[in-house]
Image 1 (spheres, rainbow, N blue to C red):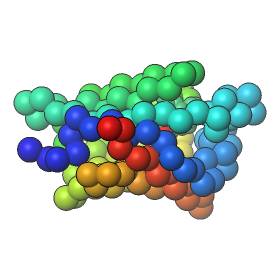
Image 2: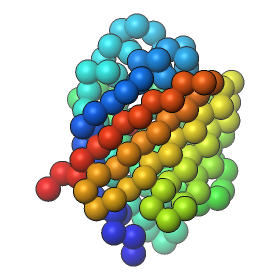
Image 3: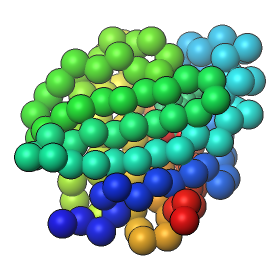
Image 4: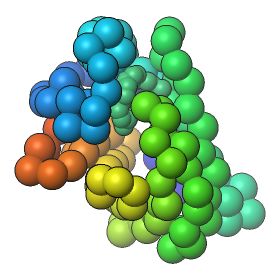
Length: 132
Ligand code: ACD
């Protein structure tokens, strides 16, 4: 069992999230709200089905997927995309194909999770610390 499954990671620092959202066409009010939040991310697995939950005071999101299998996803900002997730060691790599292609790489350690999110030429880095 992967040691980071079932751990809750809370946002600690964030760089370029506003530019990332802007490139996706997210409006000003939602961007302001999105930037002010400290979401909690949790990845779990049951019989090969992974669940990635993101919770915050404003919006919650939950996606379920099998590794390497394309699935339909509605993103937090309401885009309809085709996503595929792969796991490379402790790194969950999510590729979303839609009007824009985005990649979210989440690297888990026992104490923190680092998400690198890319769209166009924008790179957004968010670091989350494990909640005890
Ligand atoms: C996180 C949030 C990851 C968000 C990644 C992609 C979403 C794209 C744009 C965000 C749009 C609106 C922002 C609103 C809320 C942000 C937090 C919501 C959490 C469910 O993993 O940190």
